[in-house]
Image (cartoon, rainbow, N blue to C red; front, side, top):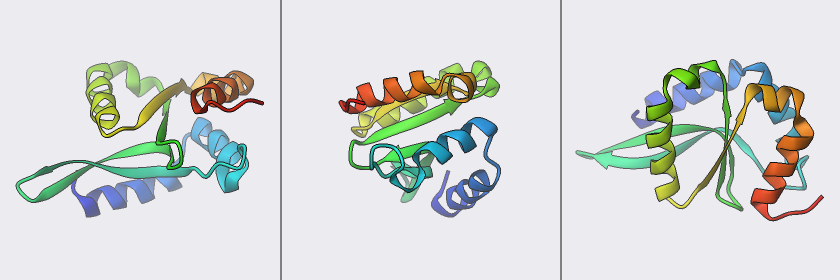
Length: 124
């Protein structure tokens, strides 16, 4: 997507968070998660075609560790190929992508926290 289209979509996604995204955001916002800064619905430029920059929107982003956190709902079962290509493109930019299901975030927060800390090489 182009910049202004992506920006508008990101703003709308911030307003229309899923329950899992809301819970994740409440856990990490304002440096609540081990004093790390996270952004939500973060725009990532991944290509430029004929002078137009193209962007993905990551659910959550940590600049310090170049980590993208994706919260996957049911829709992701129908777009696995797209998600894989998107993740490969993002990782090619030097990011590390970690994915959690809605259920994991909503019902297994301790496990989500453990996996995220392990990825970030931090300890509890």
